Image (tube, rainbow, N blue to C red; front, side, top):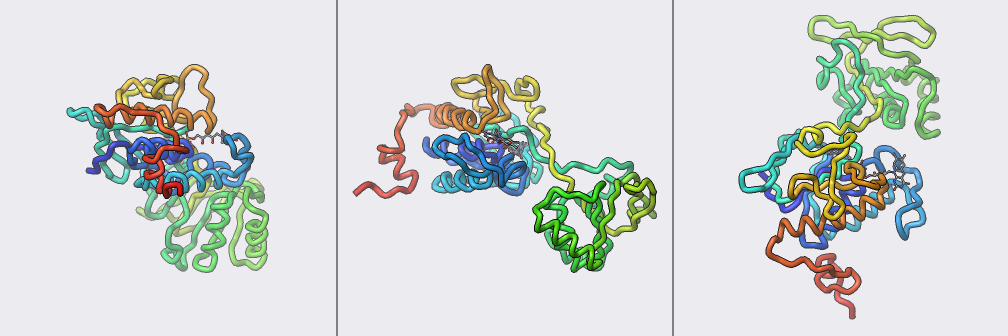
Length: 342
Ligand code: FAD
């Protein structure tokens, strides 16, 4: 059980800035995200697209914004727990909050800030009768960590984006790879598509324009996918492993089950503290709602600042919290690791 003053659920841009604002007030945070990397929508949905409305930053990409936020919060040494979803949040008898993740990590937190955005990103699952039984054995959502584990196998990769094409290309020297997508068109970088076409022409991997319609099994083994090809024919595509990389979609998921007030799948908060109806549980960024709410990063940053002050009042109930400027406060300079002037 990890005891902490603050647990931030969600490592999107707002969750990251929340760490900074908490850090300025002397609170070190643990941060959990279901994704394997920090950055939320900025990394998952538009890493290379420009953002023009971050104050004093005329332009930066989603990836650059996240890199700068990570740099900015580094002095506060947050503890990241990535690749795990927060499943449960309950109040203990002593008022602290007991939180548990899908990986079995447990925290006892004085405050929890939910920065869950539009929800936890989950792989889009292939809905075919009987297929779910093979998940984590012959069926995986995502590329394998170690390509060698598929050596010599017949592998079907489903998807059309950079991740799917990259996986098929990387696997081709190790396995007999068939990439499948409903059309012979891809949403990947031109150079990745060119590599794919080259490898197809050299028969280093196969491509099939088709959609999965069913499975074939022998005993407890998945032996083939039934596919409906773009030309209207159906046939079986034999396989040993099926890798589905058809992207991620956000699901509010367990946040909806934590007994907090929701309005159209968003957490209702006040605008002085950004607190939910539960004391010590705050919600910032895209996950919250209040009159006039705008789902903008800039608004989330403001919310994080006020939520941090309110969290500090919970963590340090007997200490008056004063506003200090980062420009002039020696305490803040020390916290930020900045050498005293002169
Ligand atoms: P998110 O970025 O959604 O991050 C939330 C994180 O919480 C996710 O990583 C998720 O995995 C995690 N999470 C959720 N539930 C759990 C759980 N139970 N356990 C663990 N982790 C969980 N905004 C602007 O201001 N300017 C722009 O120019 C702009 N351009 C955009 C362009 C596009 C294409 C899109 C889609 C959005 C754009 N936005 C823009 C909106 C902006 O990206 C969002 O407002 C911002 O990402 C919200 O940040 P967040 O930290 O609240 O949530």
